[in-house]
Length: 337
Image 1 (cartoon, rainbow, N blue to C red):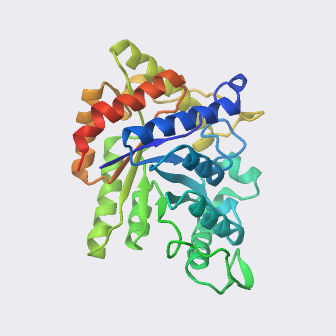
Image 2: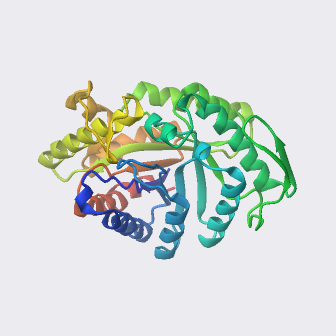
């Protein structure tokens, strides 16, 4: 099982400054690179202060310039917000600039506030994503491409420069619903999923769906990536404080993910949650290094190929760097292949 740090650029305090937020992410990437993490991940979002990254490919290039070997995953780029004729060329350029360390994670978009203010009705995101994905894969694979579809209609054109890697960088689909996990995996796609703050039962259904699809495909190298909010706490007092911080994070996250999408000048308004602190603590990974190794062991046994740790949920940078250090030195060695 490979290890990845999600550079999710949480920005709960406007006075902290976006420049400081992104510098923090670069420091985390540099440390993860030195410690031997397989990858770091970047999530695209616009107009909001949670997972704040409006320029994922640009940031991937910046990270590559500050690191030596670590892979950089866009987890995820929201395809319905882009024109694939432009975006395909940007992907090729970013893959070149990162020296082929780019892994392209893509998704449909999940925040109604964000999508609809950028002109994409949330009810259309699935159909737009599916067509965008097909167009993108074709543009990256074929030279002369024309298209006649519901959302794309264009005469023959060729994306330049051509991909260094055939078909472009490896592509991974972000999906939560177990049925959709099966559907995309059955098409031979790498999968990224998460139960969010949900329970173990949902995770097991997601994994079962992936494994069923992989089994039906026969010989295939598709992979399953799991993303979780997680943190290493040095003692019980710190653990309780980190759980409270995670609850505050989810009070903003839920607002735009499943809630009404109330945003004040870019800042997501915290809203009350139905999930208690005790229930949240049972469903996220905030614990000591030894406990983390124990909690991750079943994931490895389930066949998870890559574990993405979202440690950026409002905890200060000093503690986040300590968390990366402990994950790399005290947890990751338990899962070396």
